[in-house]
Image 1 (cartoon, rainbow, N blue to C red):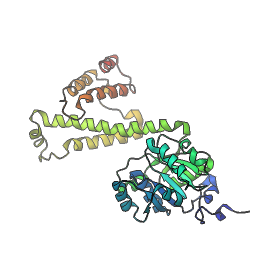
Image 2 (cartoon, rainbow, N blue to C red):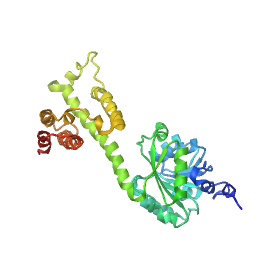
Image 3 (tube, rainbow, N blue to C red):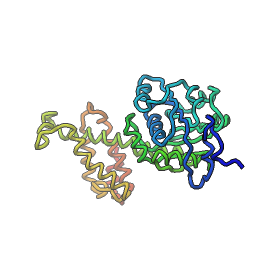
Image 4 (cartoon, rainbow, N blue to C red):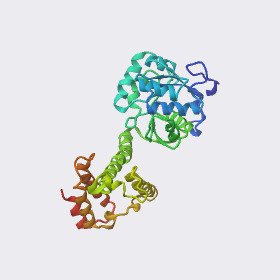
Length: 333
C-alpha cells in the first residue's frame, strides 16, 4: 500500500498529500511552493512567515508600484508574475485580497486555466468561509479560509505579530481543518475553528473591538488636547508639564491608562469597569456630556464625540446595576 509520504505533489516532490496522514495529531506539513495574490500587507506577512517555516514563496502577484516594492523588501527571492503565472507555480495558493474583491479574484483564478488539481487554496478574508472558493474546489482545489486576528502595517514586525495571533480557520472537512491548523501552527499562531455560518459574526466582533478602539482613542486624544490647550491654544500646551515637553502629550497621558484598562478587561471582563458610570454618578456623566458638547467643530470628529460618549456610556451602564437617574441622563437626546 502506498503511504501518504510516498505521494507526490504537483511539482513532482512531496506535496499536499502528507497532510492527510495522522489528521488527529496534526502532522508536520511537507514543504510547499507558495503563490501569493497579492503582495499587500497581509500577503507579504504570510509569505515571510511561511518561508520562516521552510516553505518557498515561488511567485507573487504585485500590480502596483507599492506592492512591487513591498514584495522586493519582504520576499526578495520570489518572482513577480502575472496571475496565471502565480497560480501555475503554486502548491499552496494564498489569496490575500480584501473581502470585497475575493469573489472576483476567485473567478479570475478559475478562468486562468492554470490551477492544478489538489492545489491548496487559502484566502485570508475575515467575514467569508470556504463557500466563496467553490469554483476552485470544483476544479480540484482544497479550499481553506485562514484569517489572522491581527492588524498589519506592511513592515517586518507584521511577521512577529502573526506569531502572537489567533487565526480563524474554516474548511470543508476534517482534512481541510487539519491542513489549515498545521499551517497556522507552523507560522507560530493559534488556530481557532470558526464555522462557515459564523464567519460574519466572528469578523464583526473583531472589527468592533479593534477598529472602533482606534476611533475611541482618536476621540479621546482630541478631547484631551482641547483640555490641555485650554483657551490659550498651543501656548498653554508648552507649560502643561514641568519640563515643558509638549510632544504627543495627550497620547502620553492616555497610554498607561488605556493599556492598563485593556489588560484588566481581558483578564477580568466587565468587573474591570471603573469610573462614573460604574459608580452610578449621574451628575458626573451629565457634566462630561456638557463639556464634550462644547468642543469646537474644527477638531477632527469633535462634533460627534459627545454622542459617541453617550452611546458607549449607555452600553457600559448595561454591564452595571445602573440607577434610574443615570439612565435618564444617557437616554436624553
